[in-house]
Length: 165
Image (cartoon, rainbow, N blue to C red; front, side):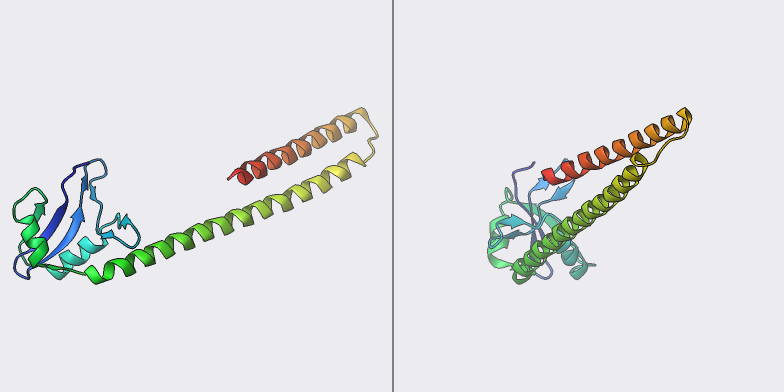
């Protein structure tokens, strides 16, 4: 990752947006930084807004090693600076909602597996209580019992694996 911090500048409006460091592996910038959340936006939201607000204008990408960098940071307007904390809070809330949705879906999946397990166990019990009249019936019932037992064990392993996290 490059260590220089980058800003995108519109000289015409004397405004800039902070892109921060560029990651050549992902071909992305870190995005705006939130002091309150101690995190980068890690997306192009502010860059996209800046580009749309300044379409038709000449823009310059300036890194922190350029002599104009600190002058621009001091004198130009940091566009949408007041929106950074609110946006980061919204992103945080959205991530929490997504995590909660995933947890709910996992719980529903676990419940569905347990219902299926109970149905299989009941079917297995009815097979075990069924009398066989011929040797062939005995092998068929043993095979069904084995299949139902294997299904229950597989469901148990899946449920146990899901409970690890």
